[in-house]
Image (cartoon, rainbow, N blue to C red; front, side, top):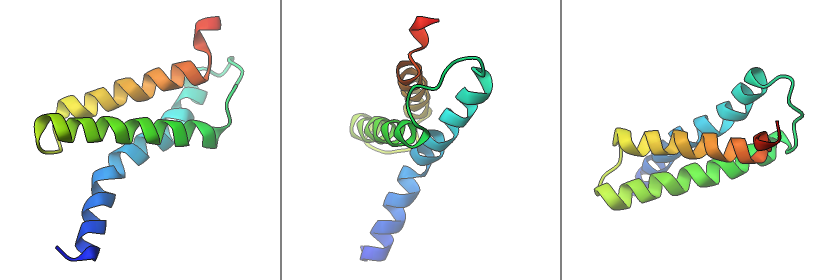
Length: 92
């Protein structure tokens, strides 16, 4: 496999993790308008992207191939959980 093909595959594999990491903090700000933002937007994106990438990697390892809906559901659950922790939502 050529290096450009490998780069294309890796970027396409990480694209759902990046989009979810970018959109989740924005949607959280719309939903929880009264809540004070504790972590900066870029911190939320970086932490969420790292965790989402880890979930995608675990899904690839466990199932043997990517694109399983259970992996994507786990990624959404992990992203929502980390958002809950970063915004300290348990202190409502």
